[in-house]
Length: 409
View (cartoon, rainbow, N blue to C red):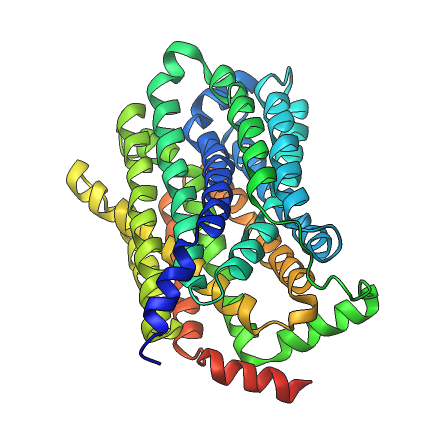
């Protein structure tokens, strides 16, 4: 027992595994950074296509909805073709989708490009989680936290740069040039990630059997509570982040550069929270970390309408960003307690469910905003986060969850 911390650190720093972490994390940096670049330039997108907040919110929902739809197929493909092909292929295809979004001549084509972007990045999500979880079995919380923190850094840097330059170079070029890093990082992922499947010797499960396994997993209290809570928090976070720069500009009176700077701060705070949360959860357990994270998400969402001045805005927006601490802890928890034989497939199907529901967050906020109810929308999102807090407060430990899963079988 006394040697465990040393073994864990050594396991985390093995050169081969370190390259896996670097490749997956850098890929996630650009995937998430590109996704959140769009909210930063929504005012220009609305002007280009002549749409309102509801139309802009629909575009963001299309991205998240398409991303959600691809989670289940992406999870099944992990067990069939392996993580290396999925990660590298996703990045190449995403590069092509970015070009469609950037140079769409009409709003309809723009929506098609958004759907393509969501579908191609959807292949990355499940493989990202399982490749890191399998490479770092003794440090999954910390390793997943580092990967997601890289995504948060991308979400801070890319929108901030876009918000600063959009007036000079236009939103189309800012999106279009991203094809270059996507292709480059695809080559890195192909070189670094091992070619492996969920179970090399087993036949792929029949869909009927797979659905049955997932249904049994969801019926266990641990998985049901964790998935319900993450769905509520994702819905709230999606609604906030899709319109935060627009809200700060149109309602709170900040200029666009300041608004995108605050948007970047959200993800900087999120990156720090993700790095800390995974390590803390590995030591003291998931329930306390997740409950505290959801409680802060509740308070910060409810505080947004009362923002008055740059300093208060910075504090509240940074608090909103700490919600990102939920992801590495929740992901590591749920992946670990799923049946090993269909881990990738089951994880993908669960991700489809909670991302598909949460994709509606931006459409809801956009619809509220077009009716002059921006503030009321944030109160609704705060209430959903409060419900997630109650669910996390009753989350059992991993050991208890695994016993419940075994009893359910």
